[in-house]
Length: 162
Image (cartoon, rainbow, N blue to C red; front, side):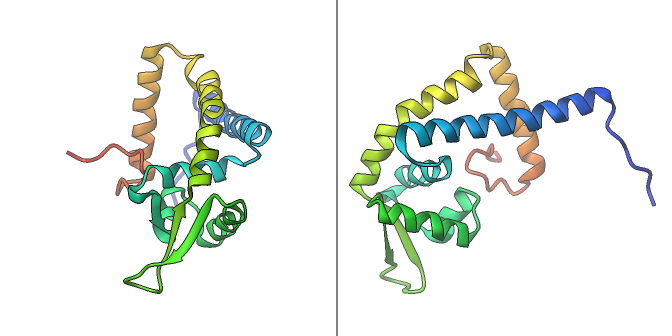
C-alpha cells in the first residue's frame, strides 16, 4: 500500500480556486442564457455543435460524444429542443438504427440570437480579467490537463497529434 500524497498548501489553494472558478463560471453562463434566451447552457452547446457540423446534423451518438453527455440525458435535451422546433430527428437512410439530430432553421436563428450575449458573458468572465499572455498560458495549462484526462484526444478542443 502506498502512502497518500496529500496536497500541499499551494496545491490545495489551486485546487479550490479551480473548483470554485469552474462552478461559478458554469453557473454564470447558465444564468445568462436562461435569462436572455430561455435555454440552459447544455442546450446552447447542443445547438452550437450542430451548427458547426456538416449539414448542421450529427448522429445522436456523435452528438453525445461531442457534448459529453449520456445518451439518456442527450435524448431528453433533444426532446425539449424538438418541442421548441429547434432540432429535428430522423432515421439515417442507410442505417435505420441510427438517429440523426439536425438543427432546424428556427434552431439556427435561436442560436444566432443567443450567441452575442453568451459570447459577451464568456468574454466578461473568462477573457477580460486576463492579459493576452495569461490567456495563452491558461490555454497551455488547459491543454496539458486535457492531455491527461483525454489521452486519445477525443475532446473537440483537444490539441491534435502531429
